[in-house]
Amino acid sequence: MCSVPWLVDYAPAILQWLGSVPGLKQVSEGVIRQTFFGQFVGGDSIPACFPLLERLRREKKGALFSYSVEVDASGSSASSGSSDSAATLSSSSSHKQIVEELLDSIDRAADFEDGMAAGTGGAKSVDSGRRTWIAVKMSGMVPDSQSLLHFSAYLTRSQSQTPLKPPVAFPGCPRASDMDIILSSKAKARDRSPMTERDVQDVRELYEDLVRIGRKAQERGVKLIIDSEYSWYQPAVDSLSLALMRQFNRPQPAPSFFSTPKPTSALVEQPLIYGTFQAYLRRNPEYLARSLKDAKAGGYGIGIKLVRGAYHPQETAAHPSSSTSSSSSPSSSPSPSPPPSHAATSLSISPDPLPPVWATKPETDKCFDDAARVLVSALREDIAQAQGAPRLAVMFATHNRESCEVVLERMVEEGLAVREREGEKGKEAFRVGDEVARRVTLGQLYGMNDELTDSLVDKIKSSSPMLVKYIPYGELSQVMPYLSRRAVENKSVLGGGQAAAERRRAWGEIYARIFGGR
Picture 1: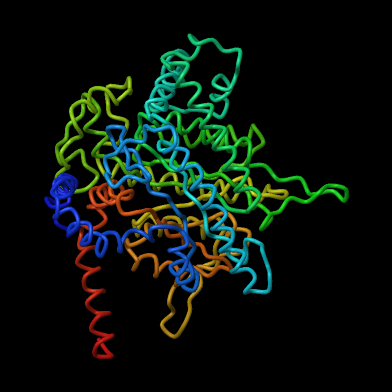
Picture 2: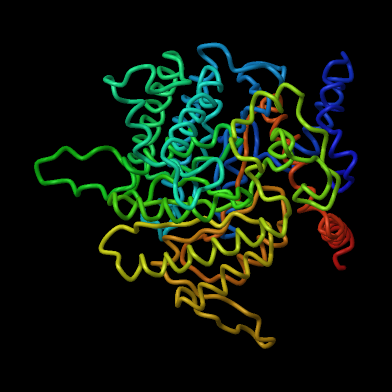
């Protein structure tokens, strides 16, 4: 079904209509639970995902959990206790429920890793495989996502007053220090325009909650990945992410003889906090270079999750000057219908004449691969210069086989991996040492491109899992926006024969299980 372009494009509208008809709503939810939910979602809760975690670990794969309650292009989201997937997170308790869920998920991820370590003699280092991480999506953690939009508008205005040379495309190059004026009690309201005092209060409270989450992750030895958002939220998300890195991505002081040790599952492997860098944004090369430079100058580590990008159709539709023709889409299929007209007129805050995203997929592919080469070279320098904790770690999150090959080939060129030949047929393999495995991860979505994931696991030889599956979880009503977006944005992954290849693999496995052969 996901390989039928017109069905994917109209899936959100179809699901919304089915959900509004009594009787059909229950039937459609039952079908979705047994199909899309079962394919792309780990379960209703993290404990429900534990059997999946154990299976993935046996397959030498880690996990990145995401509580998939997300804001859509119009600023609404599935609410935690609501059966309506279009309910907004406007109540004072809904966003706090997400914060508490994240705190609980860190504990559960750490408990799982403690159990795994106990089964291997009690070793609790990264080499024993502490690869159960937690993703954080900020837009659901505020009472009103407009606070993030207004913060982004403030940052955009501030950058326009002191433009970089050469100029950087929107959403520009936020910095860790951008949060200082929001946290300062001396700053006047006009210094933060167009933010209202309520916006300032909400962003401050968000940062306090993120610090709570960071401290919990630090105590339990669980890494955090800050997810990307729409470009109109991204400047705010960037500045918050970098401020968290500045605070938490530093080596922990060793406990002294007189200090009281804190309860902790493991020594925190640095960097603790990762931000997401989107290759489909035209600003990505400059932003990546600036962020690496700032981290080095500031004496803190930087974690980078490099992705292509998840919202290309919405970004092009929201920008006033962009076209919604198929040539602007990252896939070869026609673009889905644009968001509601109010989103196109009110959400884009870009001052640039061009959309923030590249116009074509080949441009995005080139940006991703160029960034991957830069990062592998930076990793080699970090290892050569490191004294103690790593200052740089990268997750290359992609379903593109060619990009995975770019990463592995670059690692060989930089001396971070050794190419080997195994078996009678001389099957290619890449051996990676512990120092590199601490810093490099490859990631793919749960339920997508398992053939690629399995082939990478098979060819990469390391002491800890280097492949991580991104696993959303949550009640069915909560993850419906995620499922709708996932189907739309991954048409390119399912195109080019990928869906047909997945079907052949599935039927081959069914045949083998029934008849004992292929």
